[in-house]
Length: 194
Image (cartoon, rainbow, N blue to C red; front, side, top):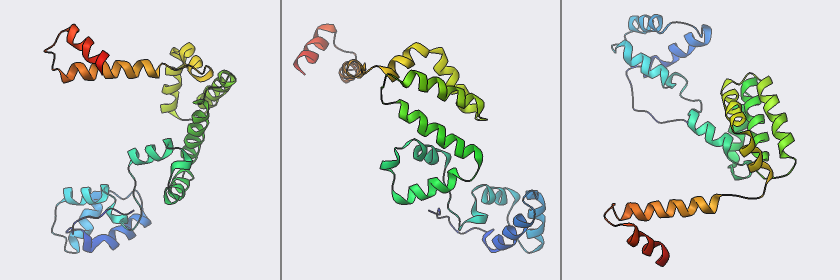
């Protein structure tokens, strides 16, 4: 969806800016500023910078933040709305790096369901990521390598330490609720009675 903005002094010059940026995408903002100033623009260079950086020159196009795109990439495809499927398909097809990233993320998501063959699949996934030109995923694979045994156990064994972590979280929450005023005895009683 297209974000809504307040009216700006730059709005009357949007078509000129759009045309100039289509002709020469690398045109310096200072040149654009001088051109629209000659056409009657009364605002400052900073206002033009902000207008362009917000993507308002192309305001009829859909804009998406990096955080929202990451959330869409990490969401199960079954849980995405139809319009998000279409948007995600367009965005991931926009460049080869995005296509590779989406493919690698989906392949990694398959590993999250424990299965004995996941150890070999993980090694293959790491090799594919290292062969790709995706520096952030390279850092992720280095982290996986540092905890290789734990990662392989998590991907291959049906066991989970989730219940233990849940008890730890609950204990810490109860201790915070008491604001540190009570000792171990009261904490123990609250846990046992809770």
